[in-house]
Length: 179
Image (cartoon, rainbow, N blue to C red; front, side, top):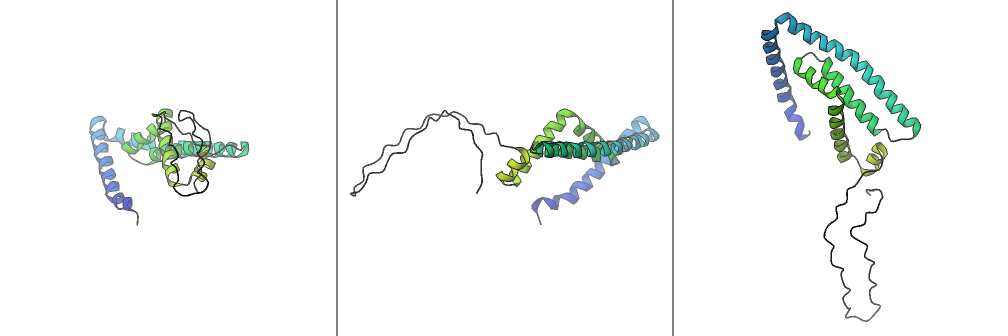
């Protein structure tokens, strides 16, 4: 069993208590009937958006596959949109607010970046390259390292050939391949 799974039941219990507390507080502020209508309306909106986001994700995936582009960005955006719509469809005010936030473009990009980084950590570089395209690597210019001088060999035989030294400030484009 994974280490993080033992925290799921207590987290769900805390989420249920938080939802109930927020519902009671909102019910006291605006009235019980208005709070029930607010939860019902948010759930209805979430169901409508769930269908729309699912179709949008599928169209984006198909378009990327037909054009030969890596489908990762479309899949990531679709997953975040579906999660936001699903949270909005769940009855509850806290989950509805979080779902609504995930449907906003800035938060969607932020969450999508997190999903991409988590996916790249969990799969091989080859699979990540197939999903998201070539990785971008940042190269920072550091202090130049001294060039090692070949040491004379005490044994007779051919002397080792010195390896060419490349400029440490020059970036070389390429792909990262795990073997």
